[in-house]
Length: 313
Image (cartoon, rainbow, N blue to C red):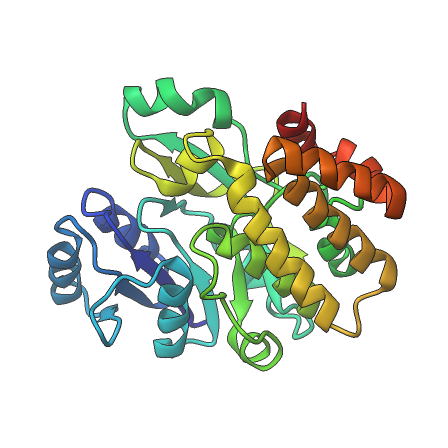
């Protein structure tokens, strides 16, 4: 295996060295690609020092030296990669020593196009733990049992009951089918949840297999300045960002002729649920009355959505 590890870097001067060194411990890691996204802190200088220190570390910025967000930043990293496999690592997270144990065996089968595993959690400070322990606790982010690749996409769509989640930090993909089957890669239109949208499409186009699900293979670093942590903890209203996520997923599904009709309908209902939940009060109830008449099942599916219920009631 020759793995290219893609690390988007933004406002992570305190953490990026740990991330890089956690990836360099593996002989399978061919290169660590840092893409610095105009950080307001001293992350660029730290990245330069890491690239000078380690010959497997390569540093890039966007051509205009601007800030483009995690999606385009990961895309640039993939474009610059030279390995046969792609893995991802956020700059404030890190790999554990078992990160590629399952991959080394599973990828011997050419039918395996991707492997995912379990993500642990680490609090960088007592303040971060006090603020976010209720959200993450000490539990794994994982898929709860081993699934056939054909079930991963409907599982992520909440169509198989209690499926669970996997993180992009625990994902390893064969580069050739990724580049051939998944277009676009990460969408530029999403500043948040672009990794979730990417994983939805990826699990539809590629055969993704379970790796280690009962032990962490990578760790999410939780700190006060993590943007997605602020969304998940309600510092940023999550329904607002998820309306945009499900709008993108819904548009993609409508344009993808091979997605079964019942899955397209489910995606439309998920989008509609978040759309209603995020609407102003008067508009919200107008939409509910409209859909009660024209599409009662959408309202019914929305009532099973915890975010929909919370913002509706």
